[in-house]
Amino acid sequence: MSELSAFPAASPAEPTPSQTVGPFFAFGLPFSGGADVVPPGTPGAISVHGTVRDGAGAPVPDALLEFWQTGPDGRLPSRPGSVHRDGRSFTGFARVPTDRAGDYAVRTLRPAAPAGSVDAPHIAVTVFARGLLHHLFTRIYFPNHTEANAADPLLASLDDDRRVTLMAVPDGSVTGPGYRFDVRLQGPGETVFLDLIAGSDDSDGRAG
Image (cartoon, rainbow, N blue to C red; front, side, top):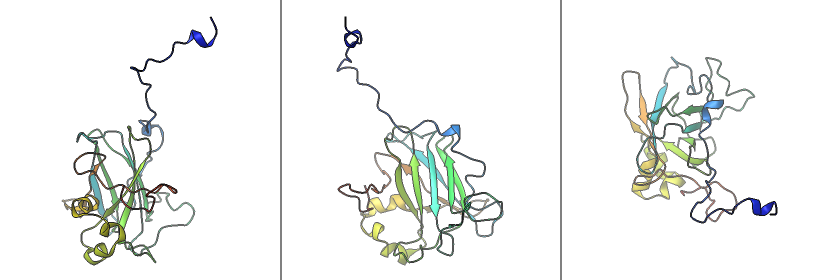
């Protein structure tokens, strides 16, 4: 018997498992203060929170989300070490895991329109989760920017039922002003995700 014949061929009825993202996030990616784009007690701070759900509507308990945004001045922090939590600075970045109920929450400031951009104020979001071959990109927009949202190229390219999946919903509480933004990975109400892969057929940054 040859070395090759010693290993039986895989049966067509037994496909090998695919390689997906996670679950591995608890091994170092989350960090202390990762949900605080600004420290507690910052004037004007808001919460952005929600639930990540799969195609069946079930919560995803081990997703990881990253948030990138401008500050109220429309600028992105760019100095070395700007994402370091020093207890006083706006970092423009958060990284948070979902909990067992699929929930997440970050503390931040309302973004301004990026300097020199035609885009409306928004927060860029990257989603990692098991079952995904690649991480996903989306955005959070805020309903109070009526004129800017109407002129935003991405929002203008979407039908009403798709545009609403990118809009945060005000739901302030006793802890202060807040916005709810749920992420639906597939199925009814699926969140609009962006195709940012260079060279793809529809890599113009519009909805995928």
